[in-house]
Image (cartoon, rainbow over all chains, first blue to last red; front, top):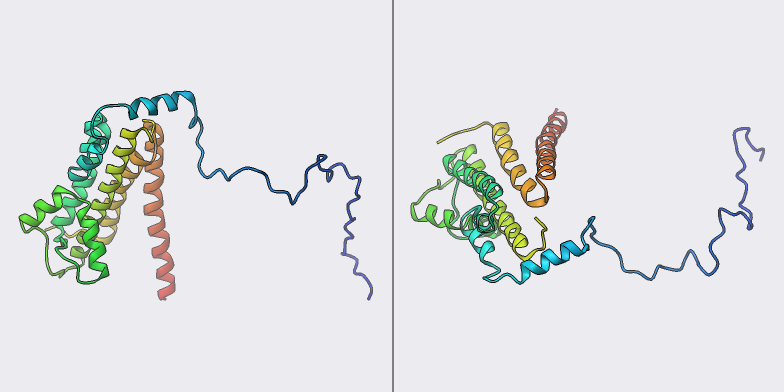
Amino acid sequence: MPRSRNTQVVPTPRRDDPELRLKRGTSIREPLNRGPVLYSQKGMGSAENKAASAANKTDKGFVYLPLIAGWLVPGAGHFLLRKWGRGTLLAISIIALYALGLAMDGKLYSGAQDILELLGLVGDLGNGLMYFVGRMMSLGGDPIQFTTAEYGTKFIEFAGLLNVIAAIDAHNLRTGRKAS
Amino acid sequence: MIRPSHFTALLLVAVFASTVFGITMRDTPKRMLRYGLYCFTLFVGSAIVLSWVMYFIAR
């Protein structure tokens, strides 16, 4: 078969090509004798960070207090650690989301009949004391009659999940896993 | 009882969620602000893009 004019012939690399030459004693197929670096950040293993972490760990007091306080009251975990600005912003965001959800006639789950309701209940429980106060005061709509009530239900669940994230952040600050 | 539109509800969620994500996922205030703005842009931008995609699928 005649070769077309546009066909280019790629030359095969020669064995003595310096770009292909490996260092003596190494092989392409030979894996590096190191474990994979899953997570790394600049300055993570520095002496300052290790010293700060060690200092935090030796602090007296209950380590899980910011976690529990942050779950019960949004932002309280950060307040305990004297992170006033962050705590205030977190509290405003989470409480506003919860209050808007209730104002939209969102539903506060009381029990779980199926898996979806169970997930909703777990999300609601993330709100801590706000959930229990809402349940005691019989807040929230039931059953859902408007589209906005569905939005409200999701707002309440989302507020609970964000509150859990905030509480875990406070715990990480307390244990020194997060630098500042 | 308040009844916001779907897009208003999206904007409210995006603002508050971005605030929490920015504070909890980054260390310094400058990086928190940048990450919060990034999350907000992704929330709103992806919603707009997906809504246009669904609009053309439905036609």
